View 1: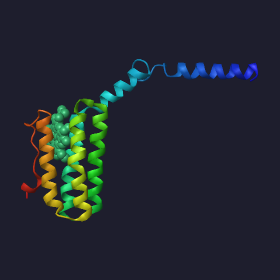
View 2: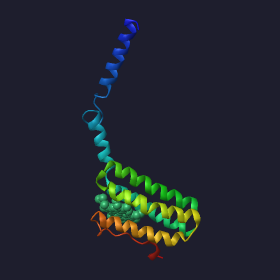
View 3: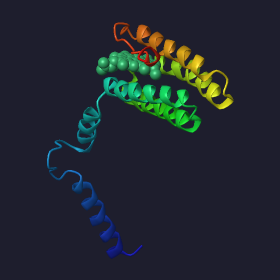
View 4: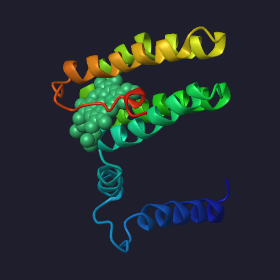
Length: 149
Ligand code: HEC
């Protein structure tokens, strides 16, 4: 490689390094600190549960109206938000892994096979409650959608 092109590469490299250190409108610190700040803003399991609870109710509605595609969509999103949350906050990972192995597959199967999905939804709910006990938040209730009608 010729010397001038090497020099250009070197300058480009230096430029790309200094670029991330430039001041940001509101994020402070180096690149890692900035990512940590954004991760903090994404919040922890409390926000995950907010989305989970919303989708849990949508899952109920979908099962009730036999909208299988929509039910599977909601179940997938429940798993996705939980998995992302477990990655961000590994404290709850073990309990989530238990839920992924024991709650999601039978619920998914019941929807696909159309084998009493509403009955399975109630079993699925009991596993949400089990995880709350495992994580010492048994006092956090889950409003049972079939009781509100
Ligand atoms: C890892 C085990 C775990 C699983 C699985 C789980 N939860 Fe939770 N849930 C928690 C924890 C821990 C909290 C307390 C919030 C926090 O982390 O600060 C919580 C809180 C909640 C809350 C209260 C939220 C609030 O802000 O008032 C609701 C509602 C809820 N979960 C619903 C559900 C539903 C519905 C399911 C099943 C689809 C479920 N959870 C599955 C661990 C779990």
